Every structure is written in C-alpha cells, then in structure tokens.
Image 1 (cartoon, rainbow, N blue to C red):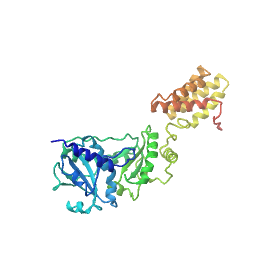
Image 2 (image 1 turned 135 degrees about the horizontal axis):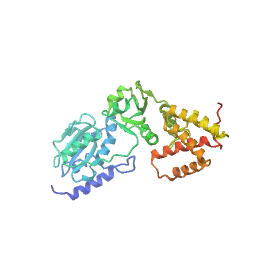
Image 3 (image 1 turned 135 degrees about the vertical axis):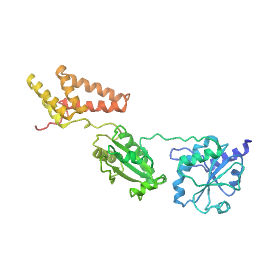
Image 4 (image 1 turned 90 degrees about the vertical axis):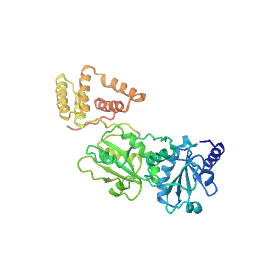
Amino acid sequence: MKFNFAYVFLLCLISYAHGHETASGGSTTYVELTSDSFHDVVGHDQGVFVKFYAPWCGHCKNLAPTWEDLANAFAHVKDKVVIAKLDADNYKDVGSKYGVSGYPTLKWFPPGESDNPETYDGGRDLESLATFVEQKSNTKKRIKKATTAVTVLTASNFDGIVLDEKKNVLVEFYAPWCGHCKSLAPTYEKVAKTFSPESECVVANLDATVHKELGEKYGVKGFPTIKFFPKGEDKTPIDYDKSRSEEDFVKYLNEKCGTERQVGGGLNEKAGKIPELDAIALRYINAVSEDSIDKILKEAEDEAASINTKPAKYYVKVMEKIKEKPGYVDSEISRLEKILKSGTISENKMDDFTIRKNILSSFTKGPGLVHQEL
C-alpha cells in the first residue's frame, strides 16, 4: 500500500482543528468530518470508521466517551485507520447518501472505498468496537486502562462481587456522559482508595448505559444512583441518601462495614481498640503490687482469649513487655511514629502499626486516656 504523505498531512490538520480536550487534558484523536472534508478523508489509503450522529441524540452522547477511547486506541496507526464522526443532522446530504436513518449509525469504509461502506451492528462497548476495527484493518489496538481503586463491575462479574454474602459493597450506577457522575468521580476514587485495604468493604461502580439490564433490575432512573449492598444472606440494596462528600462516604461505610477508616486514608485513632481491654489496661498501669499486677494480667489473658483477635492478643503482649521494661510504652510509641511518618511501609503494615500505636495509647497516663467506671 502506497503511503500518501499529503493525505496524512491533511488528516493531521483536520484532527488538530477538530480534536477537543478530554478530562485528562489530552487531545482526542478522532476526526470531525463535514460535507466538504468527507471525501478528503474517506476513500483513500486508510480504512475509516465513521460515527454518524446528532448532537441532541441521547444514545450518541452515551457513545461519545467510548468513541474517544476508540480513537485513542488506534492513534498509533493513523496511516492505516481513521476514527471519525459526522454530524448527520447538520450535514444531511452526507447522511442521506449513506442511508442514515437513525442515530448513532456506524459505518466502516475500507481503504479506497467511499460508496459501499459496511454498517456496523455489533456491541458498542470499547472492546467490541476495537476488535471490529482490528479485524477490518489488520492492526492492533492499544487501550490504556486507567489505574483505579474502584472495582469496575460488568454483567459478568456483578453477581460474584455484589451478591457475595461475605462482602459489603457500595455501587455507583453511572453514565459516562453524566456531569454529576464526572464531578463525583475524583471523590469516589479517594473513597475507594481509602477502603482498598478492607477486603470485606468494596467500593464499586457500573456503567448503567452499557449494562442497562442491571440498572433496570435495581430501579436506576437517574445518574448517579448509589446503593449499598450489605453482607449476609439478605443482599437487598439500601439507597445511599447521604451527602456525596468524601467525609460522609467514609463515615457511612465505617458505620455499615464496622471499619475505622479516616478521610484521606489510613485508620483512625479508634482502630483496634477494645473497650473491655482498655478498662483492664487502665487498672494494670495503676496497679501497685506484684500480686495485683499478676492478677490483672491473668484477667487480660482470659478476656483476650475469649475475644480471640490479633489486637486483643496485643494488649496482653504489651502488659508482659511493661512488666519486663517499665519504659516500654513510650519508647515503642516513639518508634512506631517514626515508621508511620517515614512513608516507606506497605498499607497493611501501616494499618498494623497504627493499631499497635492506638492500643499502646491505652497504657499511657497522658491526654486522651478514657477512664471507665468498673
């Protein structure tokens, strides 16, 4: 196939003139066609995939973000593939010529062909569209998948994640074109990252324009719609009706999931604390005789055994360390604070050390110690 430099130069000019800014700040790589430019692009050395659309068409708006992603997926092979679109409501002459009677209509024009395009009638998700273009153009797509802490749901994985009896799941039903959904996205991402260490508390979303049957099943009538699916046998969703601030999302999920996450990530000062053992810790550090110390330690061991969690066992370990080395608590808190501030440890270690520090605070006589009536 002969490479047409004049054509590619023209194509770059058209793309530059009509590309627009995406949410990430980059320029899209599809080509906006008009009646005048249509045959400057179609019918040459490259295959051209054209979306005939109308600005007022809801389905066209739904497809728009995917069409941008499709163009970007083939930006590296502009000499072989052009992803384009044409406002057929404005340029009716072109739409009429190619039998466009509804929107959006997608047509593939093979290289050198401008009269008999193939109408595309497959799926309109990115994977389906990209696979079609690959097959027609003998090229390979390059889809850049954004890194996200949000669990992305589809029809194939929805039940396995959302209806898992061992998981609490917050689900945002969204539409890619929805302004409120776009505004919520950065906050929702922060919340998902905050709860990512919690295996039983999942922050997820679902494109309800692609998976319409799931949106209809759960009564989604507007975007975004947010529902909480509690763990347990009864997975009946609860409508999320709180504020959509990061603080309120974190507070809501902590209450529903029994977690102690703080805004911005990490655990709060309550994480790992056990009221029954806090009361025993207070008595332990105020004990004066060896006999009372041993008696309280035995009480703590029994209580920790009945609770049988890692934090409960740590209370006992601290008591044993204090018995060996009276200054242990202050030195250990100081050591943990240095590690936590270093930023060199994993999320799991960060949680573990935060819990230890919280429990150690129960053995201090400084501010923040809660005295409880026994």
